[in-house]
Image (cartoon, rainbow, N blue to C red; front, side, top):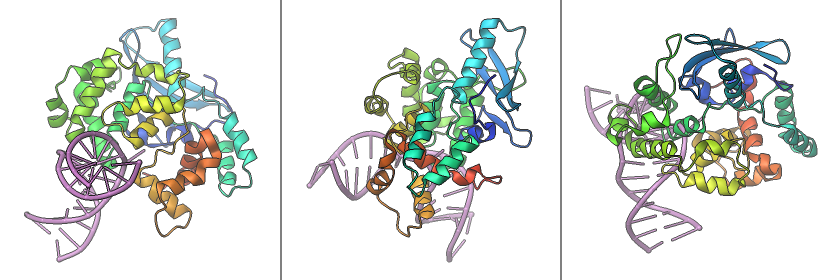
Length: 303
DNA sequence: GCGTCCAGGTCTACC
DNA sequence: GGTAGACCTGGACGC
């Protein structure tokens, strides 16, 4: 499978925390990314992705029985989505040239040259939305355990022993009590159930958001209309849709920005927005690449 | 062992 | 529109 240049699988995988959440698996030593995928036929397959040559990826698919050509094409399409291979970063690169005088521009240019800038996504917007809800107001350990329990409880067996991420329909069939008692999602339980029910009913059609030409502020309002999606969650989901207009500030990024820029006191959100305003529709990506610059090093400081 | 704090926030009521 | 307080969980920390 061809990839745009420059591309670095490791940097895309570790672009944010998703690779650490089931059903993703990342073998950092062997640089192998793996997970089960659910095809539109309902069949589950397991895929493994590694780098091949300078501009390619080797994809290995495990399934029960042979895959049709259409299924093989669907696997590739889902992986293109997950690795954001179709995201055009050229306008962002041009913006870094225009803003070369800014202190952060050099580091961003380097990051782009190394192949950073693409964020790992889930195969579906629904999975991204569920995981985003599971990151709100809790430690990463709790996010991991909530997502892990969702996969264990509701995922379907996949070839190779893993389990798929649950479908919206499978989650929608469970009562709120299930998410509270079995998933241990606490007050997020009604949010998860409502999200699943709305996604399963197609109102709204979450998957359409990926290709939508709807202006970002309008899309942001639609996401905010989902219960449990405040400013952070909505802007984080927008980021995974390839919309970088907003910063998706959370306690971690606020703290890290203050540290990176040598501020003793944490700047207000308005100040942080002002810092990145020159980047326009790429403000969120500029901010994210700045706060994760040390992740691009050989030994990242996170998680 | 126990209490408190807080983490990749959001919602509601109230002013 | 801005703010205070409630909300689940679970790990870290101080005592």
